[in-house]
Image (cartoon, rainbow, N blue to C red; front, side, top):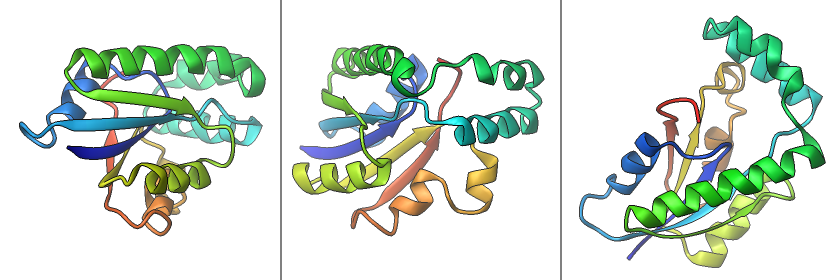
Length: 157
């Protein structure tokens, strides 16, 4: 069985689930999902800039209403549960956890712990971070020792 660590920032959509579960054809895949709850005020600014770059001005204006820190834990746990249920319903083995430390440290530990074959980072576009190669996928390539695939979410969750 192929083992993938899937790093996400929100609940997987049905299109996302279909995409990641069919990447390896008929081969069975076990997913170990890491979900990063919303961060701090600096993350909010980067998200707003990304929204503006995508022409989503209403979303940029609503960024400050999005729960962060401890307030984001409940919605993150729910998003993780929804994602795991969807992956299992698609026929894949799936388990997961929220990221409580630095995301890349948690990713490296999990890759080692489960003997992962690959890492899939599935997020919305983050133009500022990607431009400066500070996004999760770019940074993970230097830390995890397995191939890192960067994919963009198909639609809003």
